[in-house]
Image (cartoon, rainbow, N blue to C red):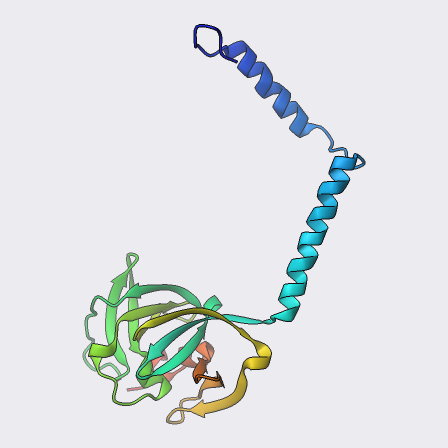
Length: 199
């Protein structure tokens, strides 16, 4: 497509592009051996992925510190994670409601995760990050400690338990060895401090 003088041969380039467009519009020949081979390899790859999903059915969760303990939040419930760079307190708010902060151009209500799950004796100096949660009637962020990472928890590994916090609901739905406590985000989102019904 380049002439001997180093310039682009535009008529030839446009002709090649037109041929490419026509070949894309043409019906694919799925009967050719090359097409059958591609489809066979694609089917094998998809089957391997399906086997892996069956072997490891479970849920990916964000593992983090709340107080001195490890907790896990379902990754599908997490919109984002950000450093906790301060918040503006709200006079008269419940003790678990730390205040509001501006993140991504929006105001988020910041709650002390330790108080919501019943961890005691956690000072503000241990709060390092905010976890922005999906859903709910308001933009809700949990102030937490250090982030540990994301991990797949197979369903068979999670042991059942419910831990009720001051009559506010079953905040912890299970645990895995370590221990890592698994938080029920729906219960957190309906906590009276989060909904504004508690003082």
